[in-house]
Length: 360
Length: 74
Image (cartoon, rainbow over all chains, first blue to last red; front, side):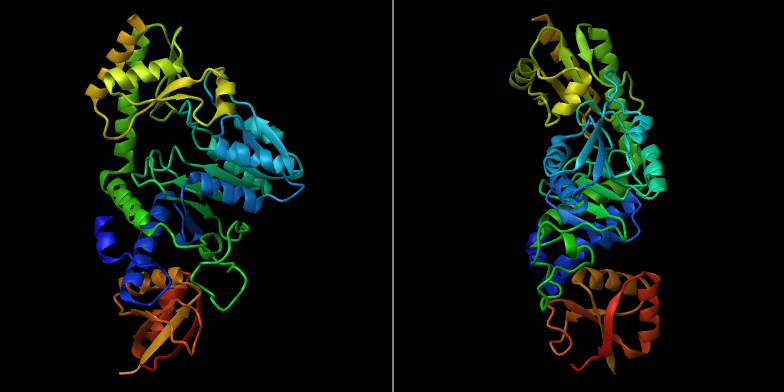
């Protein structure tokens, strides 16, 4: 990002001078790395956004039409829940498929059962941001494709954490954020739209292309990418993607599984702790939601932060539906999420901190 | 030496093409689109006339749509 700011901080795609072209190349390079990571054939089908929330809003607002019916799950983040509730208030049909209260898992058969003749879209998270439960996207994708129903997947939790292939998984639209497991800076994210799928733009103008015309271009990414993009952010995201390529997604995934396994094993030995979601590491990300019996989640989080310098997120995690699904609404839970750079010692420190808080 | 230029739908397409052409071992320079061709504020790629066949082959192989190919009047 520092190199970018010094050498190429001109507006990409607006001018023919060398700094502008270099900025455009930075954007394209990051787009191409993202395409490669997600199994996308044409990098230009990816439009940059500020985050996954913006990508999801563009997809939902730009795809759903009045009279459509949409199927979603009870594990969605409110970046999906709120736009869908808004759409519902505008006359769109909505079915919310309930997850299992123990595991947070959604049965693909329940999604299939919820589909009606007017269903045009299924939208689901690839993994819950509360329980870390990985959802059956492949099964749903196969069904959706066979019925000509579009599938929008929220990969905020999974992009860079587990392998994703839009073709193999039958994904028509994919929303991602750069600042989590893709090791990018905040203010980066994007939306992939399959070729021939029509998504209307929320914003118009400022594409740098077709300057003589008063209508928004219909080609990607310009159609969904209005205004000067966060190009310095894209440079940072590109560096994050290079790190993933060099390290290997499998190695990153394996390491995070080791960390979460160590943590789950330690928790089992503590007693007096309720852990939500799947019981072991299979089918879950390195996200663990828990509560210490008899202690408010915010109190646990405050003491972890104040006394141990351990930062977790307490509350509802922007996902009231998911907390209702697992029985932690409105109290919430304490959520630990581990990254590739966390160490075994840090896991052990978190476990002993929880033990002390529980004891005192 | 005569040169030709190719224009695209967008700068993003032009830069995708630039990468594909360069990776094929051919030369391509990104330049501002001449005003006589388009009022777009985008860029075009300038290449050697002798490479025209190879350049268009790369574009079609990579499914890159372009708007037109013209003589470069530098």
